[in-house]
Length: 200
Image (cartoon, rainbow, N blue to C red; front, side, top):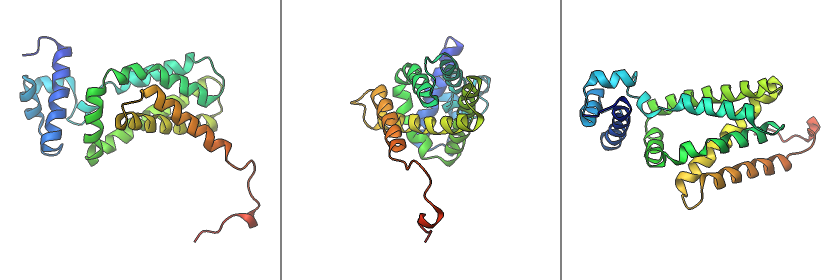
């Protein structure tokens, strides 16, 4: 039996991940997760409200770390503030790679988990936008920057999972370089209405 709450939590997470990969999320029960982790089902529900949440432990810590890093970033431009914040939390993700890689695959294959993942991402994006507003960024730009920055971070995370030969930091810097390149190639002003391409 796990000797501490932290150990029980870790074993429940690992057991859930293993069973979701072996049997699928929908075919796995909380009782089976608890049994594999060596605890009873009551212990499972002391740590997690449902079998989806077991794969999203740490999301609130990540959100808090990101908003704190936004507040402390030594930059003025919103995207540079966000890049600095994302780089601050890389250690959290890199230390959890053995769990993060199979977790992403399980989420991608499971509609119920994709829905929860999108809700968690929306919560983080809103927290980032609010942190930017607290730094004086306008409401409209804060929301756009948070959405765009999170998309770049998410792309970097998946690239890192697919290509571990480069660090997460390298993939993150590349994603933001690509983002700047997209901005640099955008037209400086809207084309006149007559010059806009027609929808087919």
